[in-house]
Image (cartoon, rainbow, N blue to C red; front, side, top):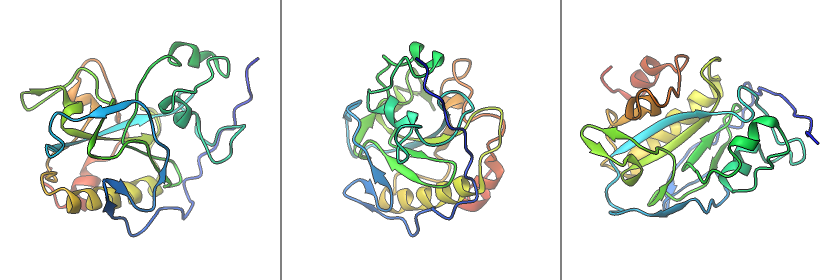
Length: 209
C-alpha cells in the first residue's frame, strides 16, 4: 500500500544554523544521522573537492516523511531503510547503498550522514582534473531539490555558511574546487541542474567565475 506523501517547500523558515564550525569532522548546528554507506578514505588528509548534488524523494517532492515529521525519505535512503512500497519510484532505488556527507533541506536545515574524514558514497564513476574516483578526495553536499525548480533562499544561505566553515577547517578546499555532480560525471548526471545559481555562489565565496 502506498503511503500518502506530504509535499512542502518550507523555503522561508529561519532554521538555517549559524554560525557553523567543523569540530572533529562534524558540522556544528547540523543534525547527525550516521549512514553505514561510507568507509575509510585512502588518505584522510586529501580533501581537494566539494561536489554539489540535488536530491528529492520522490522526484520533485519536498517535505518531511509522512510518518516521521523530523525525518525524510532522503534520510531513509542514506540509512538503508527506504520502504520500496511507500512510492512506486522507490522500488528501483531502495537497494542502493549511497550517502552524502551533508544534505541541506529546503528550509535550510542541515543533516550530516558521514564525518568529513571518511569517504561517503556520493559521486560514483567520476573524474575531476584528471583524477578519477572523486569519492576518495571529495565532500558531497546534497541540496533537497531537482533540475526543474529553483533552490530556496534558505538553502543558499546554509550552503554558503557551510562552505565557509569547511574551507576554514580544511585549507586544501580552495573556493575554485567546488563543482557539480554533472561536471565530474558528464552525460551520466545532471545535478545540481540548470536552476543552481553558480554566479551567486562564486560571488559569495569570492571565487572566480
